[in-house]
Image (cartoon, rainbow, N blue to C red; front, side, top):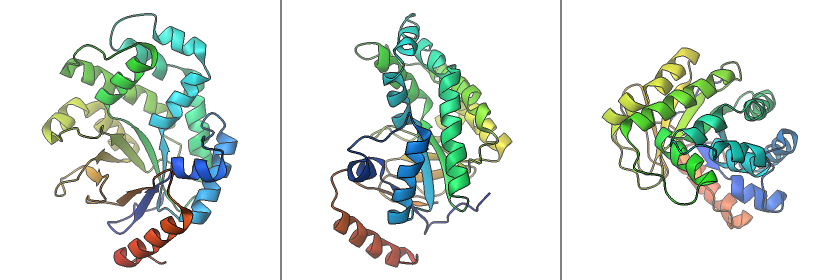
Length: 253
């Protein structure tokens, strides 16, 4: 596996931007071949040191194409049921595996990141996908149960060439590292077993901490420099911004 980028490495998150430029505004998440072709165009243009597969974007596209799965997710009213049913879907697992295998084969030198909502956010998103309104209050037991289900799902990708497992905390979420280590323990254990680096994507990363990478949406953190590109950004402005940032970080232009 390639070495993970250091603090100077750029992770350019530009899915919506690239979809607007090359795919009529919609990334083809349910078609791994078309998705990979779009990713190749993006890499040729942006040269990101990290390539992420964002399940937070892929899963809604998959659900939109699978009405029977949505119906099954809505059958019971327990909070965990939608997420449990979603993550047990074998066709979804195959889709994610095809994406990962294509990315790994096509970009062997890039850091491959598998990105998914943090457990509490995953519960809420799965619930909202099939039920109107917000779920009832989420307990620590609920979050722990979600982490267990996510770990079970991720075991299917141990040989997919993943380097980095990224748990995405929703914007505005306070960072409580003690709670993260306790409630996300199944995911910590899974990452250690497969020798994946575990990272949290947060609003702003504090000082480095042991056994966990923190990646700030504002570009802070003890690992890569995360740079989201707005979907409506103009190509010339994007390339100028990247040139300036690469010069500051000491990357080749």
